[in-house]
Amino acid sequence: MQYKNLGKTGIKVSEIGFGGEWLERHDEAESVDLLRYAHEKGINIVDCWMPDPKSRDIIGRAMEGCRESWYVQGHIGSTYQNGQYVRTRDMKFVKPAFEDLLTRLKTGYIDLGMIHYIDSREEWDTVMKGEFIEYVRDLHQKGIIRHIGLSTHNPVIGQLAVETGFIEMILFSINPAFDMRPATEDLDTMWDGYDESLSGIDPERARFYQMCEENEVGLTVMKAFFGGALLDRERSPFGVAFTPVQLIHYALTRPGVSSVLCGYDTREQIDAAVSYENASEDDKDYASVIASAPLHSYSGQCTYCGHCKPCPVNIDIAMVNKFYDLGTVQASVPESVREHYRALAHTASECIGCRGCESRCPFGVKIAERMRKAAALFGN
Image (cartoon, rainbow, N blue to C red):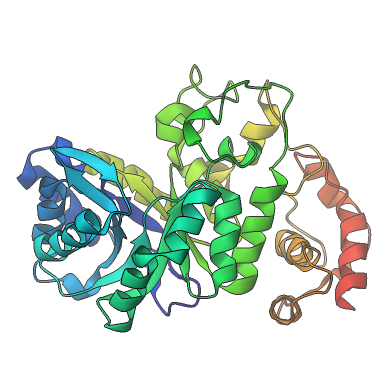
């Protein structure tokens, strides 16, 4: 298992994580076994947005004796009322729900205290000016939550979170289909008026990923498989099916991403996700699937897929392109991006213009031209 820095939290998380949403639909002992099996496979991060007592008890039992080797995303504002999940900012529900989380997880702290599910600007303003955020800050000051995080499906809210300076990581929905859709305050209407001519990553999403990378705000990923739709040709918006490994690789190649949190029903599904660690480049190749899809394409846009390799002068073209994109998102290049670029073994100025990479690019990116622009931007 590979482990990645989660932004500037100081935490190293497994790049394959555990999304706990499906735990409650299984026998408790079976779900405890699933979590422990995942841990044996190297998974060390679990998301617990679920307010139901059963899911929380399962995670608590699974972590017994090894709590310090797990990183928990525990949500604040996810409550259980009359036997149902309710997202709320009403403190008479929020506080007891969080205290219940600590009790059932049998822990005195939560590693990543998540401000739960903000998708609208109105709710953002409400949360950031009221008693709710004061409670979150107090928990953080007391060490009950080690780091402050937030979950959202809206890249505009994600950008606001990055700009706060105190939100250190974000749980965000990332997959090739979502990336092509513009920001929305209502996830349920994302695919209303579906436009088959739409192509390429939405600019707000691209900017959000770049801001996370630049500001060292870590990203963990939900909905990587689009609820399974991207695994099924009949339901896929692309008209083609992806594999779990391809979708995990897509998410992990977005700037700022540290871990992809998958949901599991069986040990076999855990094995399928963890197989990413030993997958070949052909197995990981999402780009060819997108490029050949009947409904969509990322024509002209670099997706950092690596098809351009090998370079005769050993330039890591995908990384140069990523730093170029990060460097051009603002009026001046952030110094952190410059330093990362300078650390490359070979920079864009070494490009000999052979264009062999361009013949391999599934999206028709004019790579030689981008190398010239990158060399001019960074000075070498």
